[in-house]
Length: 452
Image 1 (cartoon, helix red, strand yellow):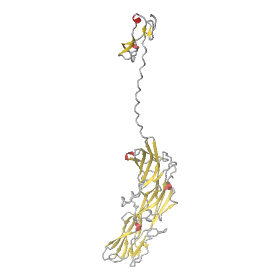
Image 2 (image 1 turned 120 degrees about the vertical axis):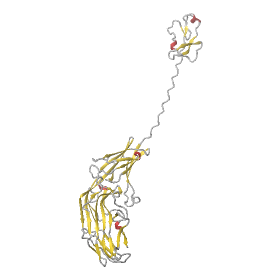
Image 3 (image 1 turned 180 degrees about the vertical axis):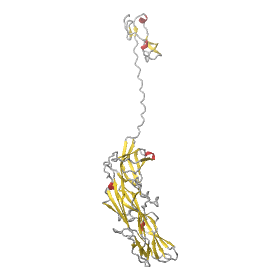
Image 4 (image 1 turned 90 degrees about the horizontal axis):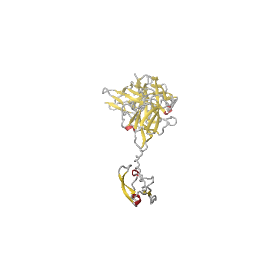
């Protein structure tokens, strides 16, 4: 019927005409719909587009059927997310470990060794000398060995040094082991911050290098030649001395002024942690006893046990000759005066061991090298020396039939003053400076060599 509309069919006068270029392919034809092919604009290829089958009315110019809109295509599945790389482990420096090598012997450095000084480590990033207390060492000591502790382990760090309450230039630092470790030079004075950096982390190790500043121009050296005397000869042995351990009776005395310059703005930080000592070595021994012939040239010679140089100390416990040495006003002040003195002695058998002939005369010297030394409370096995002086006692004399010694030309020879040891660094490790600090000791006994 003209003008009538079946379900899904448009009348011929409708403005809802079909534009093939906008149709979308149905998944399957609808009932009563045949397929026709149209060129689709969006895809630019041919697709079969379902259209309604024409009825009699359609053919006669009556109403047309209307295509049902197909469903919208499903949206494309989203692309899978890009792979996220695994997060790198957190890298950080957490500690600076530090140690200072101990002083070695001179005669047998391979076996005469002191343990390394394990120093307080750094675990803070605070540069403050008050909040992050510094380690107190002595200027000129061996290089400090540093090691960074990291997480993960064994990572290299960046090493730097900054002056801290100090206008002096910082010491050099040399990375080792690929940056995991470092060596810190010690030849400058003052307070410093060693900084290890890894990523966002820093650790600070504070240190003070105390300057033991010996004023060699203040040296006062006293020698006496009139104190040589017999020392109680009798029985089988002749004994002689150069003086006595009594005020005014020493054949050799020495005095010098010292400033112990610490760190921080006050220049006193660490001063009280550094103790002064007197370190003395025997460096020459030609002391001889001469016997009556025959044969001509019969003699006995004093031979230091272990050779030269040899430690000359108060006892076996430590290497110092601190008795009768004094420190005025004490051994912790900024300004100190060191006084010391010595009076060596000797002796030989009255009769020659091999000929039985009598002792007739004495010749030769005991020679010494004496040093102003120091040690830090924080590094007790690192022994330092700063200034030295040389002197010797010449025991020339005669021996009578009873074996009594009489000086005849005996005298003391001295240097005019102390001289600095390693002036550029304010001092040096005692072993590196050639001072023996290990047993045996000169005053612990000697051997005797005989001719014939």
